[in-house]
Image 1: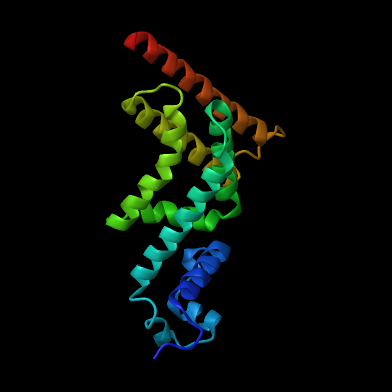
Image 2 (image 1 turned 180 degrees about the vertical axis):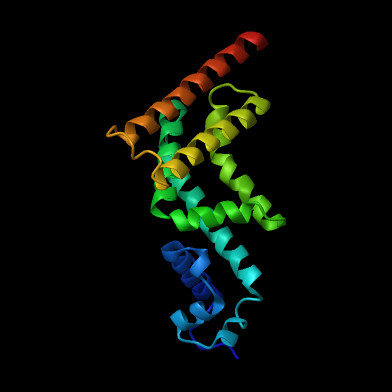
Length: 196
């Protein structure tokens, strides 16, 4: 019988906090049970398996990341929206690095729910890119480029790859996103000329 007061939401939220704090390598159902002051077997009254828990954690974490991006870009368009989203992406990845890595690992799994969630990650970017007059194919190309730049920057930054020179990484990131916004705007104008 489920322990009174313990819910599926509590189990998932605690798992997220633990993974966010120390990473998935140090996470286990035993550690989760200890943090919740219950027996490990009690967790299975609320979650079917470790795999199901990981899926639920990934879905919740993805929702948090998308919400952060959408909140940052709300009410903005064009370059301002793209920069706001890129800043929110980097902030989330830096502040929740273990969770961010967990999300990326989860998205590579053969899981229909997570595949659908992956589409949610892309939607805010596609909405912003559509404002530049890009066709759908161009939007797909440029969202891939943008995501690659954002992820690549975060990966190098968190690994200490930018520590060799006393030059602001903030400015480097600004320049990278500025380059993308200029290229996207140019691609949109070229598309207008071709359609015209």
